[in-house]
Length: 307
Length: 257
View 1 (tube, rainbow over the protein chains, first blue to last red):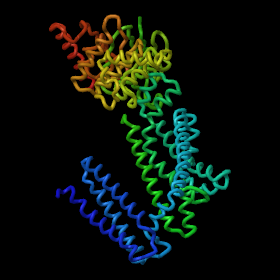
View 2: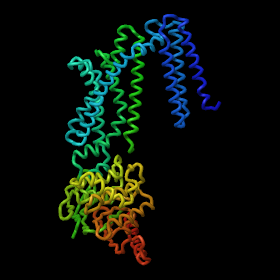
View 3: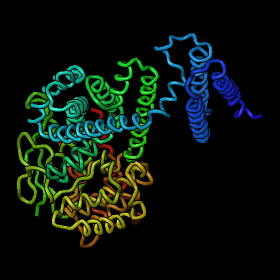
View 4: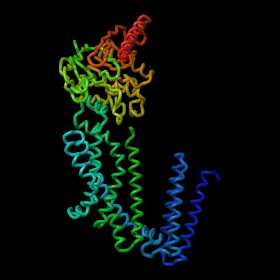
């Protein structure tokens, strides 16, 4: 066996142990949920691991990170399975068995999907509106010195206030919960991006500005054909941070008093002491966040080809 | 007729009157169709002078006139090629030239501008690189495209600020020959002001060399050599070398002080 394949040995031994334990668990402890969902999840994780490993190998990397991470995942699952299901040593309510958690996906997938959809919709509206306004107004305010002198101090005051702080007030103030949480996201994205755009425009490299000015562009051409592409990489590289902060805001807002959304789902499950559902909801949030992050990274690579 | 008149121009950086001015009561004239090279040591105010001519900054006293009119800002009668950022990094070569044309001639349609851009790219030998971004091209290629854009904008006056300063010797020579051909050939005479610190380059390109010594000091040298200067006769080549030697001595004398 060559060195490259050798690294598959330990994770797969561990995987086999895990699968055996899962298969034996129902005999040892009757009354657990069906282990089909859990085994499917293990299969999906294994598939993802192999995919990422192949991609790493193709890039010429060792793929050690993939192996290390999957080792941790299998080990944690194994400990969890042994502790909560097989030996039944965990708190019966607070630490749900993995079978119960993963069975939630099978049983509740329409509800989960609906909540994810609600969250994403809210996120998309708030995030894109906030980004759009921030970049547009930032460009205009950055270009006209008088507007800059007016907007910069205000933004400096507003930007450091975490929107989470005034989100309870906004929930009370706005006509509907959805508009309130959208506004929280808009505000959370707007101020930092607005301030960043103004500063970037104000600090444009003088030589580049000269090159543009000798072409005598109108203000409209200057803003949309010179300044916008100039600040664009900054905006895109800030996307990940803004996305993370808006997800934070979203989930927080949903904890406050929503009737839909992932934050609400987790909050609601905890309220009814259904911790299996809560853990499942947290896993879903993790997966969604990871996918969104990957999407942003992909966009960053695609959009800024000229650097 | 005098195309460019610089009349007792004074300019200094910092708070006016505090720092010693870079240019002090400087005066000269550039005739229409003349190729003038501006040489001088670092800090002698060459680039400052070019910015004044381009309309990017304004003299603290004295005036700059073009075609008899006072310069109040960048104008359609002048195009400029800089050493840094000759092109916009987010546009392809083609798009860069097209953008310049559209700014210079707003009446021209997008399609016509595109066609004209292609025409000028082929003139500088960059047609096969048209779809490339500046980051995918060498410095020399970028300068070629920048020259194509400056020419395509069809201004009477071409201002170049050390455009070949950062290039290797080979591409530099190629571009010098190209620029000479494009700007001094029959029927296409442009008024050119070319800044360089390379004396060889100045003698190769210029009809007249202005030597800026900092402040008020300005020396003039006429270069009476036949064009094109790619293949000069041995006698002319000798004269060119003599002139280079003379200028170099001047240079050393200034820097020695």
